Structure formats: C-alpha cells, structure tokens
Image (cartoon, rainbow, N blue to C red; front, side, top):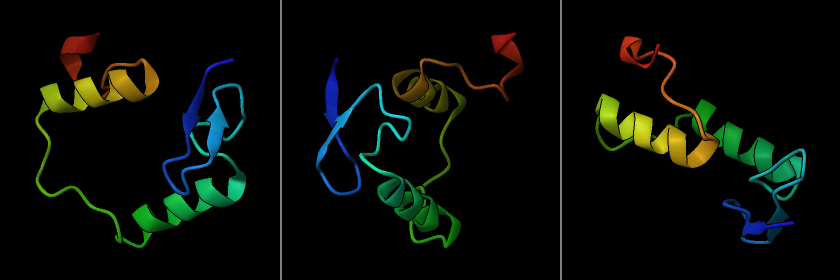
Length: 70
C-alpha cells in the first residue's frame, strides 16, 4: 500500500486509511478547523484551470462547478 506524509503533522499516512491524506482524525479535524476559522486561505482566487488541476491531483476528479466538465 502506498504511503504519503500527513499534511498536518508529517507522520506516515497510508492511502488506505479512512482519514487519508491525514494520519488520524485529529489531524483531519485540525486541518478542517484551519479552513473553517479562515486560518488558511488562498492567496488569490484560483482560475478554473488551476482548480481542475488541483482537484485532479488531490482527488482524481474534475471541478464539479465547471459546466465544461459535463
């Protein structure tokens, strides 16, 4: 099974984990809290192409809000 580093703490996070790409629910929840509290934010608005590229890389999916993807 392929493994990556947890983006929150850096520990090993095997891809089969329910919490992947995070190593635990604690790290997943800490990341969510960062977004919801606006601690994390994009430095600028992403273009549709950048969003598609990011979604493809992260989730293997295209932007569901882009009508050209349907």
